[in-house]
Image (cartoon, rainbow, N blue to C red; front, side, top):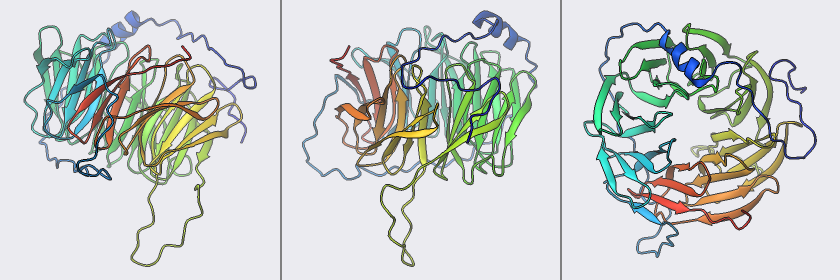
Length: 423
């Protein structure tokens, strides 16, 4: 299929590394923040929570009494159950916030694991946590839909709100604005700390994933019915809806955008990843993963092995995208030719992947408890870090890619220092 022409058209040259200079248009962060000030927010009523906790498998595939290799520098062990999420503070990259199945969230120091403060008052598993773009605020959200915001310097709670069951949450890249998606299909946007509120009504099914585009004016939201919408945050209107053949056949699991926001990649339980031009809302191409081995016919009463896209992302320095699958495949796709470039096999399912900000290195974490670094140009593994005795559930990489912070079903968060001989 030909790449779609138009504002988001792809124009790449062979295999050379391309460092793109991205003009984000005339709007600077200050004007954008000011523009978010003009957004009309209505008053919304609070909703009653109704959430069930998550079950995670205990120490899957790891024997009791097994000596676990531990490459980590720091271990944070204040959680008393699985740790579901982690984010680093963007300004200094010295603090982490973690949330867990113990209904707790903590802000702590990466250098020594020292607790700064607890984000108390949650009544269900904390599945979302993150710092605002300037590290002034930290937000935590639990499965029942209770969202709280704290000021980092005073350690004081400044705002809280209850929505339906929470699916995802993310800060605006340039303003004190929080966006979240819920199981009733709504996406919510709040100004912090005033709490002015706006809702974006999706279909009557969960808003399973979402991402604010780099321009700060639009957001892409994926839904359980396989549809995807691009929203105008200021107007509250939907700019594009992808459904039917353009949408996915199964629930969306993840969504990502490239550095200038011209391209969106969506992943789904249907094992497809769709590349979408964000300006036109048109599908540029579909990446389908063929199974590594021919599947044996499924006998009656047996379940077919399930597979799905779990995580995906764009490389900033080359026209590459990475897609991670539940069956352990990491696929590196070449966007200029729209072909599969490398397949990197993991022993167990990939939970999440992240690209290094300034190189063609992709990090994966998986159900076997390891973090791996891959060179996307060669498809070869660079290094592997272990230390958890259960599956890794989330991870974050700092700006200069010297530190990886992981969270796990073993009730711990760990800090790994990345040694890279090639730097």
